[in-house]
Length: 138
Image (tube, rainbow, N blue to C red; front, side, top):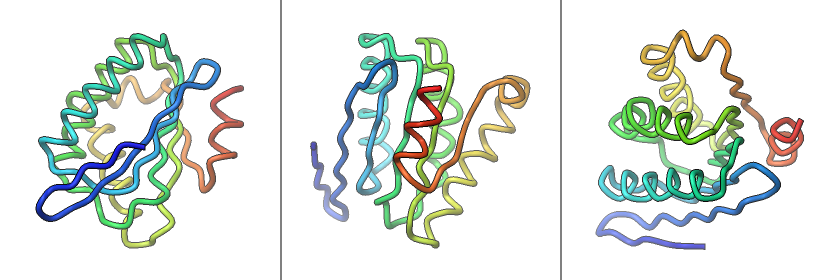
């Protein structure tokens, strides 16, 4: 697990490759700059591992995701991982109720930017890691 401490935040995350999918676990929210840096590293990881599935596990995040990061995910990260081969994404929802609207914000921005692709691109939303793993490996 890698942790980053900034003046105001500590965020940790880990990733692992299993079968043909990448599973990323987040334990905090990074600044936009740090999020961008690590998200770009995940794109390289997708490319290097030839991953076709992605599990974004934000079940331990306790603070809402800033809107600028939601836009970065929709504008830059999502098209990059799709280009590198991701064809299915599973999201494990946050357990904290106040954080759940953040996932909705990402979905709304993705729909605005990539509405046509999302009509056929499988994105599943789950309450548990096991549900996400079962679905993504089908």
